[in-house]
Length: 204
Image 1 (tube, rainbow, N blue to C red):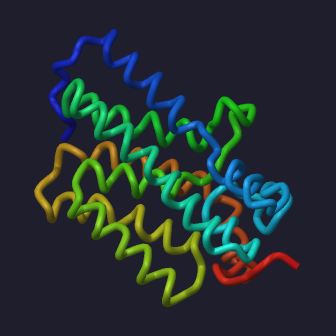
Image 2 (cartoon, rainbow, N blue to C red; image 1 turned 30 degrees about the vertical axis):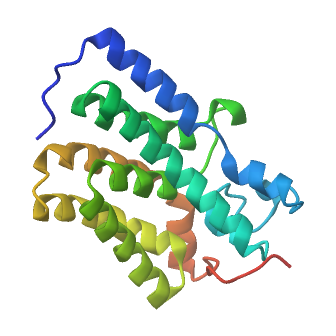
Image 3 (cartoon, helix red, strand yellow; image 1 turned 180 degrees about the vertical axis):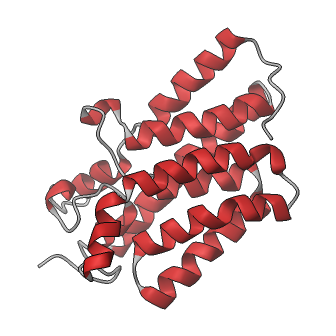
């Protein structure tokens, strides 16, 4: 199921554009530079997300990146819902996610989008977001592999949406889940080879 589209197309396009620009801000790179951690794209996996920031050894920088990357998805959703409506809220979450993984500031390159995904879910449905975050946390604690936790969470989110009574969001969750899996192609190959970096692994 999908939400009923009641907002005029022009307004939805404006919401999508603004949400994309918000989502495209590469906070990981900004935080790494502010903390003097070097070029994040030359560290660890080269990703711009919080997990790779953590590999620099700076927990405060990683926490700041996590909050900001998740926050941009949440803010996009909440502002769109408040100013426009529920159909715009879902579109805003999707656009912010696309902005993160295809950032205009990074020549349409970007991160894996997991934090932005979780922030979007928290804003769309807080119980579902909490369930998704706990799913990620449990798998991450058990296996110490961030990418595995993200992939498993993406699979579970549609089930959580159904459980908490939000079937109208399942189409969005599936679309975002497919993108999450697509962005983790190299991680999947490394996991199959037993070479995927662990969460607590720092740079040499």
